[in-house]
Amino acid sequence: MMKLEIIMTIEVLRAADVTEENDVINVSCARDKKAGMLSAASFLVARDSRGGVGVVLDFIFTLLSEKFPEHDIWLFVGNSSIQPDTRIVRYRKLWGALKSRGLEVLGGMDFRETIVYDGQGIKFFGASRLSGLSVESVVNIILNERCSYVAALPKSFKFNEALEHGWVGDLVEDLDYCYCACERNGLIFKRVGEFDDGQRGFVSIGSPNSINLLLS
Image (cartoon, rainbow, N blue to C red; front, side):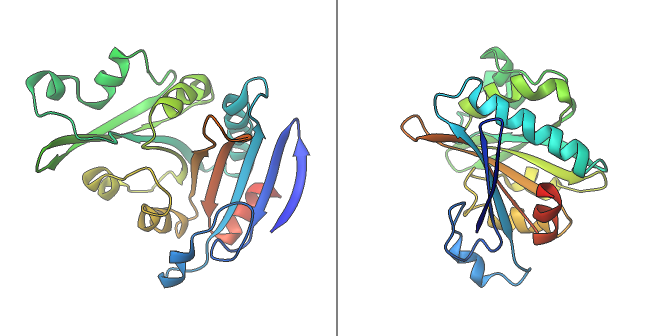
């Protein structure tokens, strides 16, 4: 791990190997994976920094636009808890239910969603392709929905399997999806930092080459 720099109050750290002890993230279970090594980076601001998570996400959008112009940026969001299988729940689905709570992806495109059946009810999972206009609204969703990720993916990337099976919103438990994205030069971003933590922001997981390019 090496500390790179502080840019406009954003502390950027890198971990070359997520299975080794570091100050970014530790995913020891990745040792059992055979898909290759994963690297990580964190982008953090002090809890009381003005703009907080929004400043960090805007910074990440700028980096991705410069370093990965051939990638699309997506929001992945899903239900963290089981929903009752009722007519109104099925009518609103994911994006409609979020909108009814004042959570809407502004500047979003190509909205997708699917339903996953559970023995006690249903869950919805969806994805939306983002634009630079989406940052503020996406932050509102991410802060309210634990089961969410931002991902930078090649334009030809197929993520139907993720939508059909869902995810839990934890990088360790969702590691198979991370590998699937990272082996195709994608990057996964997860919000970190709760109300009582000193710092907040995002942790990104990707291949060593992708993380190096992101931070170059």
